[in-house]
Image (cartoon, rainbow, N blue to C red; front, side, top):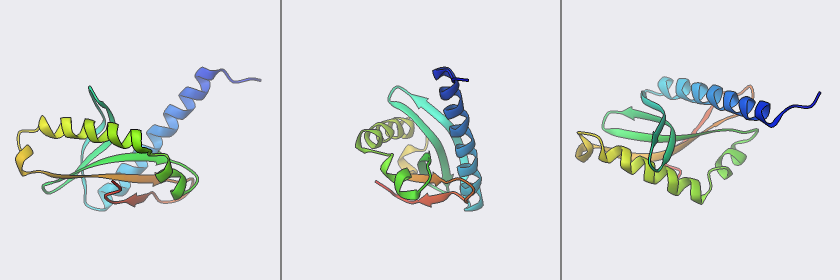
Length: 121
């Protein structure tokens, strides 16, 4: 039986949701507080936004078979898009002047605990 392209998109969507939940759980265990999931604005979407004190972390989650593949999957264009979306999100916060922020990646590998890469760009 052949799969329709729509089935592949749905499978990828579900895989992405599972990876984001696993990444969020790992970050909560590290002391981060969830702020938003799949935050959208005019510049794009940010997978996760978490907070620890005055630090806001914009997290790109990648489900891949290796950590290297996950990091490689966040190319220059994706970084610029996420930065722009993050800067717009920060600008909309009432306490924006008091906040620090950075951009992290969480690699979610099959049957492994997610790996958190801090301040990737």
